[in-house]
Length: 414
Ligand code: DON
Image 1 (cartoon, rainbow, N blue to C red):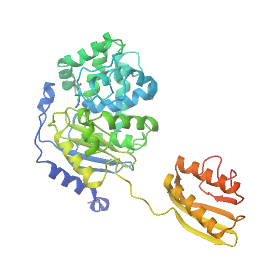
Image 2: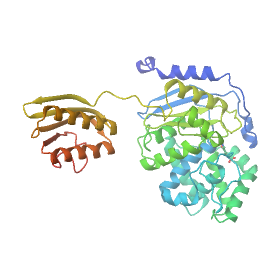
Image 3: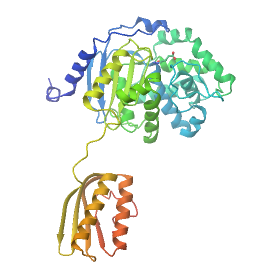
Image 4: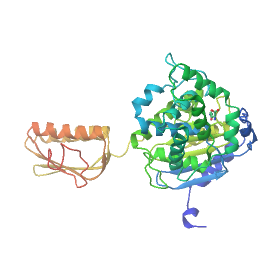
């Protein structure tokens, strides 16, 4: 066993989480696509891939299954990369529908509520650039393979089974065609959609795909930028509000991570900036989400404080030094600066200047140990420097990493 494996703390936690969730045997395997009904109901796997490219796995994490609806956010990411967010939004909304994934629900213009329900996914898939359906699928295939970091195969049997049993999806597409929202041929559109749903993945692949969204669109295993940062963020926002269908509200409260489920029993979940998660277990609850998948992700989120709305711990004060040397007040600052950090700096420096009553002092900000400055913090620092100068103080900023943005710092206000 390699040293890193021996000291590796995550696999055991994943093993324990699977053990704790395995007793959940409620729900039913999807059988409306006959080929899916053949899945092993007891299969259960989980994988976590961090933005640093480390992978952790337990259970059936390398068993293949079809992507199904988990393809939807990744195809949506490609559509907004191709056309831009607003052009896609004109055709497919962002709002949670609160309805089942296959509902016949369109607005007055025939526009689907969001890209995570079938109607929205069919329309999104039709927006991908490409002259023919095979060209559009080739682009989807290349992009989703990029997200996974390997070339994905289509499960031909599942694809044919989907096509044979796909009347409801065809009906949805015809409805959108009739109302003018879908502008391509129905059978071309459903063909591409059925193929994207039939791509074979493992739980590990889903974790890599999810980690790519967690990592600003860069696949942490291959280092390849698959979509840009804004596209990754927009995709995560839609997963956050609509990814779990009519369970989306409960999901936000109980788990609180952007996620997407599929009828073959997979779930993709994302902790932005940290890691992506893949889960697989075929029995589905009434909302069409893997029952054990929901159970294990609920345990994981509750156990390790992963809900995005969890109150973040307040880090140590960003001021590690505040001292006078004759008429010079030096403020040593450290860490990642956000709004509240700057508030603290503004108030502590103002208080210090007020107590000493030195109106012609020099204030030196030493940012040598600062690791990042957020937009709001940058603006407040700029304001602070301006106000100090207006009040007659001399100000200097030591910013060797040039973190302060234009207008402040080096050669700017300093
Ligand atoms: O459209 C369908 O019927 C499937 N190919 C995909 C639906 C799906 O995965 C819904 N997710 N829970």
